[in-house]
Image (cartoon, rainbow, N blue to C red; front, top):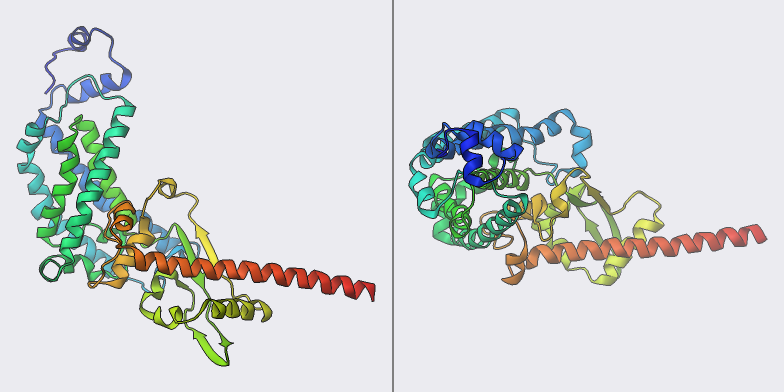
Length: 369
């Protein structure tokens, strides 16, 4: 609760007039205890868990044809009843674990020094603190996540979260109660190291959960796709079995492809172009997704790979960024997959250019005749 009875008292204590934002904060929080302000997180989390996943659900159900090219695992379609079951499970865990945890954890907020008074932090201060929170959480979450993928951690705890091999937004907080408690530690370390204002803390909790929902949305920011085809390389027929499948979905059949030499890849691209059929490598972008401009941001494609591989996955553990996986070598399979797809795409571009020049030469010679 603010130690000022009126706005005049607050201005006298600060030695200046209150800003518009500070006036709004004073009018809202002056009569509320710090405990009540902290418990606002329960309301925010309920709204986020309930409404934000509906954004992706709404797109998938009402704009199916428009969103289909961006869906990472298009073959997997959850029914509305399955989605509702996931939401009910999340809400049950919310009321039994997350809510009570918020109610009893207030003393920790007092210990680390989260403040509710005036002045309010500047936008730069909020941005810098949020950056620290994301970096600290991402690093510590990486190691906790790796622990949860050891045999004991996965079988006893983390297996629940991996029930969705093609994750959806509602599945972001879908987890064992013990995992919810454990992962609360990385989320709390940042504010403990760099304590800020309650508004910054609210923003941190909200943004972290919104990011988790996007990461589990199953909608990709950048996507490549292959169309089914086959060709002959060194006298042997090679079958490419991926019909409108996103690159993540190739993991389990990847052995059918990685055995091919680079010459075979070029042979494949030549086959595609000479056949004059619409077998091309495509790349899609969600132009309205601002997170794709964040450096080292993993995103849905990055985390969906982790879920698709399943319980034995030893790749892509990071929760937000990709630097930990890169430093500790736990993204090699993912990067190799992307590298081969990029080589194929570049090979197609090269062959396309060569065939275009041949076409021009043929057209020119035909005119001369």
